[in-house]
Length: 232
Image (cartoon, rainbow, N blue to C red; front, side, top):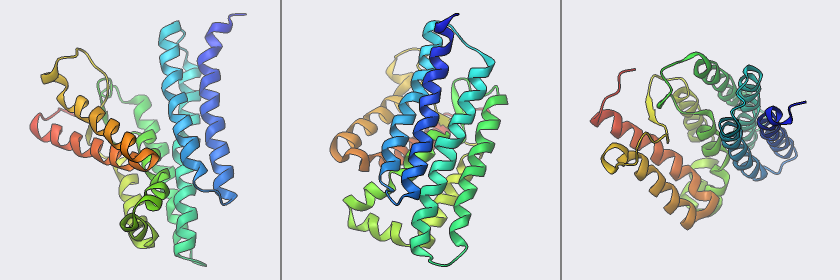
């Protein structure tokens, strides 16, 4: 039996397990744990593709498994995180169920990605891991800054922001992909700026810096799109 071809799928399975574990802790009331599992899942999500390319063991089942794992981890888990926070803001209301729109949009995003040949050197719409990382680390940001706590504890603001991010998952918006065809500064200035913002934010704020990384990434993509329009 060729063990090598199963290694990427095993890593993808760790992504899926991370998502399920994160959902368990959210339902158990330990919402901060979701961020840890989202970060772990994002690492596994990167590694499965990297290892598949390294070992040259691409497979159709691996592609489908990756999408299914991503739906749970980067779609269902952030939906439950926002749902849980909204339950505290709107006790006894049905409003928190609107958070499940995040999961629906994530499924649409992943389905579009699988059939969209335009996304080889750029993303169109916010990637599901980026959206999940942003939403699941908001509680850390709230713990770090009073202004963030005031915003996130306001159910209407949080709901509006979450629905906006869900919308951006499928909008026809070109976004930076950190794939380098060369390392020239002129051709990759926005990629380097994205990496720089990420480095500074994480070093200075830890997990609480992740929302700044994702928002900075989206804003830089908008600037790049305006300066150097893509054909989408």
